[in-house]
Image (cartoon, rainbow, N blue to C red; front, side, top):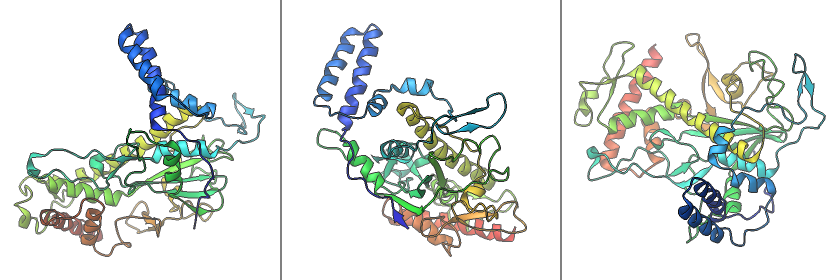
Length: 410
């Protein structure tokens, strides 16, 4: 497995100069709204921030100057690329141009919009039940371009283009958005820091057979076509669910098995930590975990879609590819996908996908033999353990062990 080759040169662009263009636009908007004095101050400040601005590609300057409201209101799904063809129907058309891949700069701008680390995250500052300490829900110290429930951040990113399949991991990155003493950020260094984290997994584009089992039939003509970049966010739902269980315990709550109408064995030993008389239904907590992790993936894609709008690129966010096929659990040798490992059982309607060994491994079996170890590993992602946190982790582990036993006997 190889890293994506490094480019020798990136343009230099500071966050301060980027801010300058935004302030210039803000000054114009304020002046137009009749707030002349405030608008003029914003313009004056922008002149200082834009001083000695280097020559940059016109497209990037356009992206930097794009007002957020314009990106929001102009967002559309744009499916027809250079080199594309609509083979039939009333909109039948064939492009007169050859496919045109994204430049390195364009691709990195979209990738960092979708998966980028944005520096140290803002922690939860207060919870009266934690006093004299502060809440420690988060699993990562770095924030990203999209939100994650309680800072769990269990997702990471794969992408494929004409040259291969890649993995970009940012969930455990701490601060890739370094700023100088003036608060300026070097865009060149920022993009390079992310580019250095890209890992090449295959030397050719991921193949998606044009079959209904793998892809919605309105998509084969425009999805994963030559010249395109397909970004695939993947979340560790098992890890997210464990983080939710820990979160419940940290807030004095626990669960019960509402499917089999059983309490969690041994939970009474933790009555000093959780309200054992008013537990949450397990199925509700499972739905909550799925909803939260779906929001994480969706907002990441939305951030990428806004960058497409800013740069002036076509593209869209969608789920019209069968997830099991993309991960590699379709069972079809023609569709290896990302080659994740998975298990099947005659009692299960779908395969149980558990991760890509050595790349993106789920917090579950077979990567982990004991769920108590998984809980400790999840804790190790965030703040160093203290005795009280260890006790809460053990309570989470008790719940996790019960869930594992229940699933095996189901």
